Amino acid sequence: MKPFKINRNSWHYWLNQHILNQNEYHMEKWEAKHSNFCSYWRATLFRVVWSVICGVVLLTMLGMMLVAVYMNPLQALYVVLVAAAIIASIIGCVLANEYFEDRKEANLEPKTLIGKQYAAYKSKICPSVEFQ
Image 1 (cartoon, helix red, strand yellow):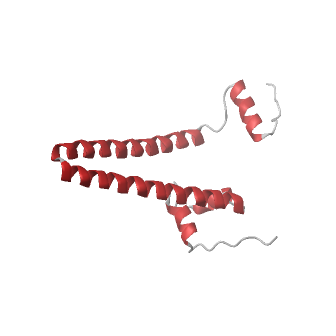
Image 2 (tube, rainbow, N blue to C red):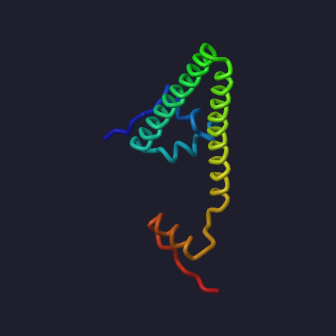
């Protein structure tokens, strides 16, 4: 089967580059992870679904605010505060994810016997043992 050629100027490449990607200017690492079509397809589909969900949530929150202002200004303040809390929690989750991703990359080598066994199980490679 011929390899599938992906244009770097296509909409799906742009989507993968800019949505939920920490290294949008260094795509070599990302491209290496998604070097087969199935992986690229899953990444693209996930980003499309994520974008649609975020758009629906934002439009719903905007609609709730407009309806609340029309119905009752005091209720509008409550709706705006709830919307701000939702947005703050989403931003907090994204920042926590970035923090833990950086921490995970810093601690690549497990230090305990159980951690080493789990890493070997996940990678399906049994490392050699050296005694000192």
